[in-house]
Amino acid sequence: MEAIVLRAEELRLGKVIAEDIFANTQYPIIYKDTKVISEHLRVIELFNLKTVLVYNDLEEIKSVETNSEKNPLTVPLPKYISFENYYNDGIVQLKKEFLNWAAGGKIDLTKVRGIMIPLIEKVLEDRSYIYNINNYSNPKDYLYHHCIATGLIATVIAKKMGFERGDTIQLAIAGMLADSGMSRIPARIRDKKNALTSSEFEEVRKHAFYSFMLVKNNPAMKEVMKVAIFQHHERLDGSGYPNGIRNGSISTFAQIIAVADVFHAMTSERVYRSKQSPFKVIEMIKEEEFGKFDIKVVQALIDIVVDLPIGTKIELSNLELGEVMFINKYSPTRPLVKLTRTGELLDLATNRSFYISRVITKDY
Image 1 (cartoon, rainbow, N blue to C red):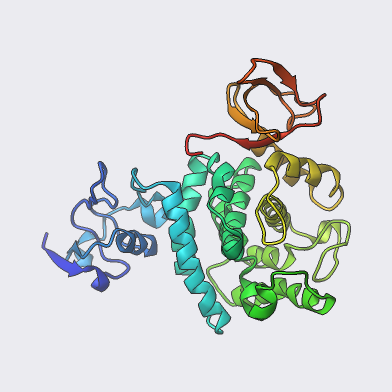
Image 2: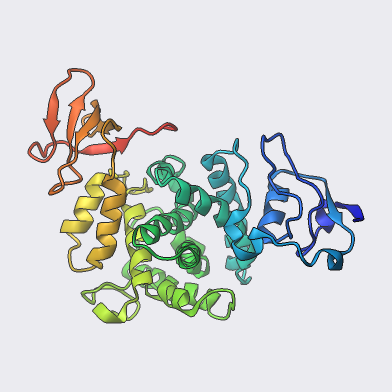
């Protein structure tokens, strides 16, 4: 079957790759006989490939079956590229898109998916990446980090709650775009370093509506996800916005984005506030925000954060290092830990002066 070499910029959707493509990797980053979709273009751009070998006549290979047509998440992810690399590259790309939205441009869902799909794949494989998200962030670029992080946290919550893969992916995209409407808020308000006035705060509250308007006419996104974007600041007790609706009027998808949004915001370093421990934030959401969020969604997040295998290395709020020895099901955010320095056993459920400030993963 005849094949031709195309420059990378000439490659189009629907073309079929004629050889395995490597990029200093053990396994191909794109396999032979793969029909090109937008995520493949993103991978090719990421690796700065100059040329690609493709079959000359697509009609001759109609019988080729590709997993990528059935599931966009089957784009092979190069093993040596870290989550952090994908994440930081996503932030750079999102900044460009955000500036386009701020100038009145439309959301290009293909580009948004290109940013999110590699990250979604990573966190679906290993949700411990969620522990490290705030380590990559900085107060200056908080908004961009918040968009991507909200989508990824929503991903792991949806998976924990048993949603099927397609809805989980759509929800991740919706979570990422929930604050896209902030691009339509004047920069002088959006980037303000000190407290907002009441009128400025009212302007910021309009972002949920603006986000909805940015996705409203996009046929690639399900209607339920568009509604979730519009409702992600509503609360079950009616204290939310933009409409102050209650209980059954708020979709579960909106609640997942809401919990992901609040969790990331409270665990992030901001210009006006230091970041807080995810374990402390979980307790605050469960106790202080009781009645505002769907308890099933909150419980899913709790299960994700506190699911620490015995022996997990942790750091306490007093900077002592230790490891988890036992999880108390009645107080899962406060396990029994063994202090590294002294060997002392400390029950955080009874000694509430301390809490886990961070989980020490292989990356941090």
